[in-house]
Image (cartoon, rainbow, N blue to C red):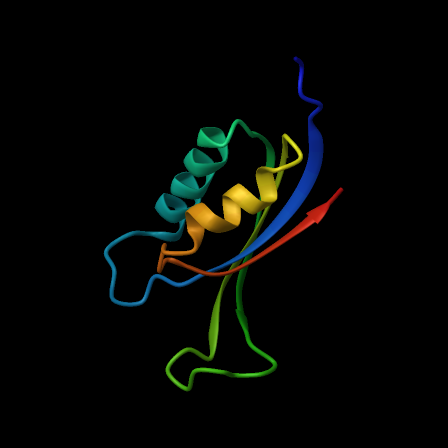
Length: 98
């Protein structure tokens, strides 16, 4: 059975406070997770550091934003959220069909 691949655009808010990992290393880790769930990264767009409009944590008033476009099976967004849920370097994840 051949699964149909869909295109997605995922936006990530990355938090490297108190860690020795750079933003590029965190992005490479996210790309590895996408590959692990049978996804294929097509584009990475680093947006840069931005301040939050609504601050939920007074210690974190801004963070680095990155958009990654990838293709994968229909259940890829759910698997990606689950795999990144416990990763403290990824503060937020937003996934849209492209």
